[in-house]
Image (cartoon, one colour):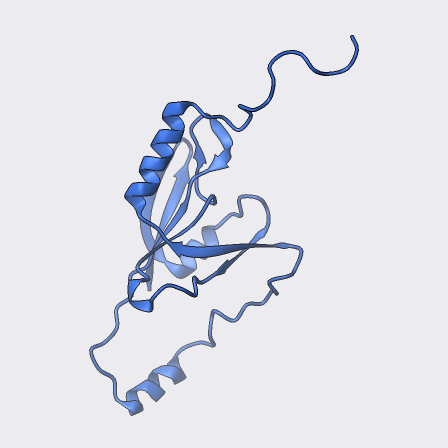
Length: 150
């Protein structure tokens, strides 16, 4: 099964199609921790084509501590029909289920994130507004005054 991934190479990032194994082999955790992604229970299965993990994507311009969304594009192709016999044959060929988590959700080394439906255009526009207003992570900090005796 082919998947799409973002590849960061030196100063540029681009989208690449590759196999699941290639993507997992090249994955480097951003914070040195395991990401545990939960499916959105309210979404319909027929709508699960584009998902996002909020605030886990690329860092924003001039503010490396604020991250954009990590977009997941899923391409799933199903056959029109399968007989019960063919279903059993396919199950025998497949490896064990991949979605059985090895770690528990309450494990302290795990960050829990929820995959949700997202409108990529609205997300892009939201980031443009944040960049145009020049909002920084430390805007609320005072520039002068405060502190101890000098």
